Length: 130
Image (cartoon, rainbow, N blue to C red; front, side):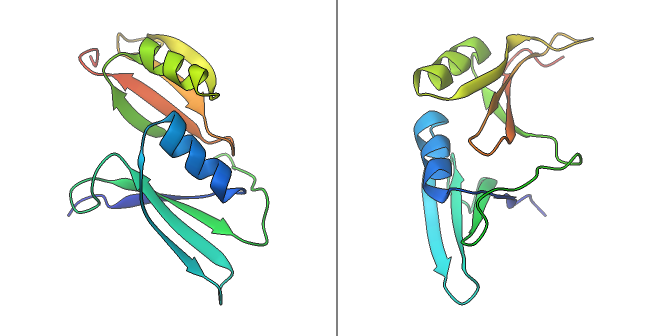
């Protein structure tokens, strides 16, 4: 078995695609409209779905915004340098919600950014996990 994808619902599909591709550097892997169901699925990621886990962005055409709830946590992305990753996000118009630094009660260097719908993305610096 292997993890295939994580699905999140987004209010503005074009804005979300721009964030994940332009700000986080993912690739748009595929997109399919379902007119009968009034929704679109878009898959984005850092590599081919046959070998990598990806994100499914689902846009229900009649819903502009979602409540995130209290059960959802975040998506984690490995980066070489968390501070540089935050700087790139900021340069590209993204929102950094926690600057790079050691996690509380540990040494792993992490940072958090937020997508246009409020979903949290954690950057975990490679080589610092401990």
